[in-house]
Image (cartoon, rainbow, N blue to C red; front, side, top):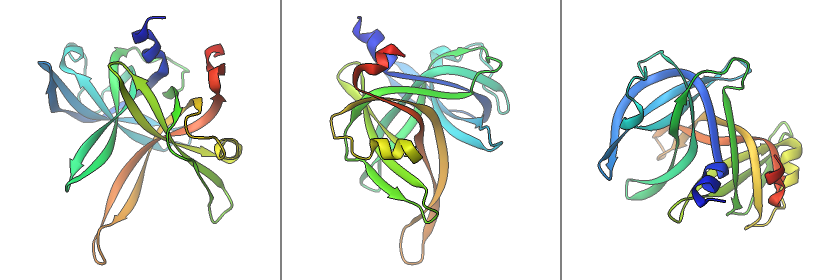
Length: 212
């Protein structure tokens, strides 16, 4: 199989929502300009996730990306490191591969990732005895790069993955979620930040994902 096709299969995202912030210039790479905006994507619970999106200027022609416009896109969930206060911070974004027509009846937030556990899973329970397990998945990309995607599993999925060893290959299916949390900066200062992660709905171990 062509390597590029393999990398595309490793990391697939479909989003449909409304533009929450108009595109702002981000950076240039090999003469190609890239822009960032936020897409507001509804949940079944009537809440919404606010997901950062990165798009090439070459894909923006003829596409309405004004505030409030409805957009559907196919892309990949990617990570990159950004220096803040002399520290490297993992940033997450959906990289647009193409814009598409909204599909009626389709889940507006679907993700499929195939990668490798690169950090020991962290299992815990909430004060209400809800089981949670945090994972960090390394998803290979072309040119010997990888994306490092935080994932969170719940309930029986959390129990299933808590003992998975580092280096194990898994395939996860779920949705991108955003959540706010308060970061304590000092004894007197704190700020509200937003975290992004893949909320796991289904997990397949090893090579079995090729059957899906």
